[in-house]
Length: 503
Image 1 (cartoon, one colour):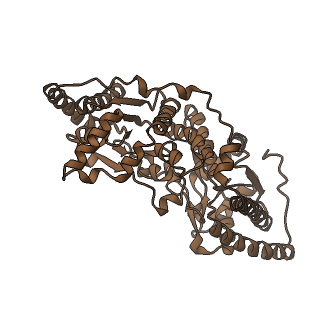
Image 2: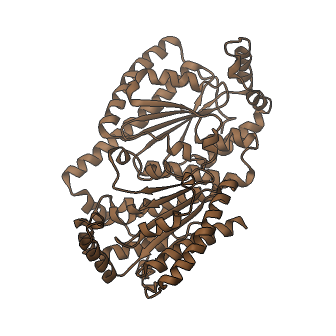
Image 3: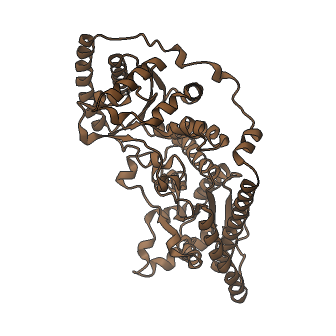
């Protein structure tokens, strides 16, 4: 692919000025249209050292309103970034709807420079590529425009540019030992780039290769690529919006969507829970004390070995999530864990991919993050209440599994708890809360309304449990009619998972 490029392509000064003037005007207009339509854009520039990524970014942003974009220079991971899954730093640098993010090098560093330098092991490559493709597919499915541009030059041109930079004290710092090493082994590094381009050139996020020996030609081609891609997306979104005005979109989606779920949802995971399981108060206290002491010790060991832990709690209203979390964390060092109560997304969160707000809160190595309600709201509340389309929540199972795999591939322990109670027990707890002035704040009209959709939620939960319980990130159904039993089962499950990892 790269070795067959015609790198002699060039553009005269007069022709360049004519072309770029029109392209700049068009790009400025498209930026405003993307902002108006809420279209987020990510532009990633990759390529050989000294191929001109910085120069081309400077040229590209001349046409843009500086209030609507941000540029990120992606270099070696910081110590903070090293303590998260490698895609974490890009999830946290994601533009919200209507904004543009431009990356000078990108998430591809792990399979390019880091691979060449052997920082990325051969055994890690398959998972790295899976994470990258999953990342791009999730974002583009949600409406993100991803424009990937690869700047190509040859070995001779690269050496010439390095020599020029090194000849001046003011620019010599821009050439690293790694740059010179890759130039010396140019053919070998080119094969690394060829492999990356082949494995990540997808329909939803294709690569655009730019012949970059002639700067003017490269600038004009980059402008043309960005303008064409954004123009197509703007037209696509406008058509979708016109369709929404003409028909009830949600009804159309329900009729047009082909359900790939093959009937396994009829199996009731929740129905297998034995809600008669119980402990006496004496048994509970004895077990609780022993498990909390273990948890206190294990928490310190997690920090020492730099193992992150992600715990997600879902369940029926009044199912006992808060009580279980309180007993779980009671003896843990508060400096090493955080509990995130997940509410309805705010305006900023709505302006991003639905998983963005959870990625930003994931723990660094050695820390524990507990989510009271989780990303599974997408396939429960949002599904049933109509806050997302059927296509969106059906797609979410794959997206969620991919996110959890990224976490476990990075060494995290991931456990998900469903706090199961029956409808009668829920009613009893609701009533008790209403009658207790100190607990009335826990019960709302919405809680009572949700009971009317119990069967719908039960169907959604069963499907969720079956489709997203994996060996590395399992669902644990907690029999919760007896609060004592539920709290002990949660503690036992967490302790067992940590002990298994530490062996």
